[in-house]
Amino acid sequence: MRTRYLILTVLLVFSGLTQARPLIVTTTTTLADLIQNSVGSDFEVYSITKGPQDPHYVEAKPSFMVKVRKAKAIVSVGLDLEVGWLPLVLRGARNPNLLPGKSGYIDASQFIHPIEAVSGKVDRSQGDIHGLGNPHYLLNPDKAQKVLEGLSIKFQHLFPEKAEAIKKSTAAYLKTLRTRQITWEKRLKPGGQFISYHKTLNDFFLSFGLNFVGAIESKPGIPPSARHILQLIKTIEQQKVSCIVVESFFETNAAIRLQKSTQVGISVVPTEVKATPSAINYLELIETLVNGIKNCSTGEVYRG
Ligand SMILES: [Zn+2]
Image 1 (tube, helix red, strand yellow):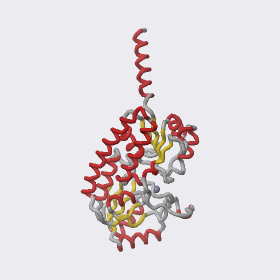
Image 2 (image 1 turned 180 degrees about the vertical axis):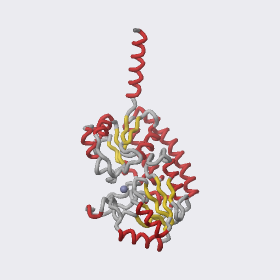
Image 3 (image 1 turned 90 degrees about the vertical axis):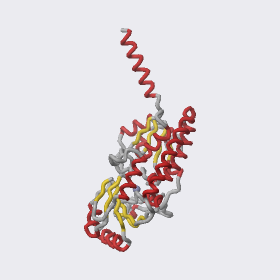
Image 4 (image 1 turned 135 degrees about the horizontal axis):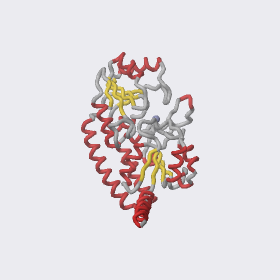
C-alpha cells in the first residue's frame, strides 16, 4: 500500500513538473526552432504547421485550437502568411490573452522591414499575393536575428521569472548563428541569376547577394501558363540563369520542362525547418539552402 502511495506521489510530482513548462505556440516549424533556442528547455514550443506542409494553406483543425487554448503565447510570421487559417484557430481556441492586440499574441514581422510590400489596393486577380510584404523573411539570417532579439524582449516581459535565463540562452544562440553565418557567406559568393517556384527565397537571395529574376508560378498561388513557361525559357537564355530553386512544397514538373529546353540546373530545397530530413533545425535549414545553391549544376536535379 505504501509503495503504491509512493508511486502515485512520484507520478503526481512528475506530471506537475511537465505541466509547469509554459507553452508557446508558433505557426511554423522555423519560428518554433528559433524560439525554442531563444527561451530554452524550460518552455514547451509547439508548431501548428509541420515541416513538409505549405504554411500558406493549412486546415484549422480542432486539435490546434485545444493547443492554443492551453498556450501562454502565440507567435505568427505575419504579413498575411497565415491569413487563411490562423484567425479560425484563434476564434476556436477562445483564449482571450492570445487574440490580436493582446500581450500573448506576437506577430514576428513587427521586428523586420519587409521587402516587396505593395502600396495601394491588392485584389484576388493578382493571385494570392503577399501585399504587406514578403512573409518568407526568416530565410534571411539577418532578419532571423532581428526577430530573435525582438521576441526575446517580449518573452522576458511575459515571463519575468525566467527573464535572465531567456536573455542568456538567446545571446548564446545568436552567437552560434552569427558564427555559422560567416561560414555561409564565405561559401556563397554574390552573383548569379536564379528562378524559384514561389517568391519564397527572395529574402535569402537578397542576404547573400544572389539575383532573383523570376518565379515559375505566373502569379502567387497560381500554376504557370504555357505562355509564362515560354517567357521563362527566354529569361533563362537571355539572363544566363544558373539555377532553378524549387521549394519542397511545390511540384517540379514545370522546372523539369524548363530544364529540357535549356539544360538549366535544378535544386529542390526545404524552406521551413523539418521540411526535408536535412533541415533538422534553423542552422541546418540555411546550411541546406547554401548546399542547394552550391550543388546546382547544368542538366541535373539536386535534392537538398
Ligand atoms: Zn508565400
